[in-house]
Image (cartoon, rainbow, N blue to C red):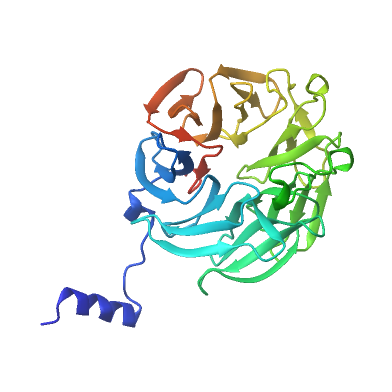
Length: 354
């Protein structure tokens, strides 16, 4: 009688082996990079109540991650100007592949799979040319790099898949170089924008914020395609304009609120679970602000030290802090979890709320 190993080998050969899903990794809802008390770094998986489902070591500080749409696989990106990303099996922490940026490139800490999960797209800087690029990686070929195309600007930070297909890219407008660390090299002449691209790299639309010192950084996309953008001000803080914008292709950028409590810095942005609100965080300002999408009115301001990660929850929003707190925010706030670690900038939703 065939033993279990022979049986599984036969299933694999016949193509009948069960395909692993996120349930096999503990059914996490979110991903977040974090720093442990011993100064080591990990990628964590959290459920919708903020409880940890897995923890995978990283070789250095992570920034954001990309979650495969069906398989329990995450790509953890190094913080800008990092040159590596790790493809991780979230069931056991195995490193499936290491993505190294090509010569003359560095990553910006974000990436996105396409809807099928066949391709990974990464935001990159061609630092000799001072141009943004989107790298394309073939998943079935072991995450082999198969091409690249222009991001439509300089300093592409975040990239998000659009429900109607294609991507939106936040080109922050800031030129950097690995030899200069995180030094911003072109502040007087920076030109940020939002760029809409097809999956083949065709330019579909582009819009610039009203002021060239408002660096477009982080993105959220609602189910109907409405895009929210969080910006970071590179000028005199006292002169900072509103740093939250909403946009649809072919329409003007609509700015919300003011920047009084933000210290010029939006760390993350997300729509609420029902899509009626958009929220931003500012770890520098120690605040989370939520706005009504239709009216633009500020509906909530939460003072929370070092808050940065924010994501949709079934009833409102979930946020994480550099003090290890996981907070549910709606008409009231509740601390759901407190862990002995420091969550990094972003909470990444694995699958949209159903």
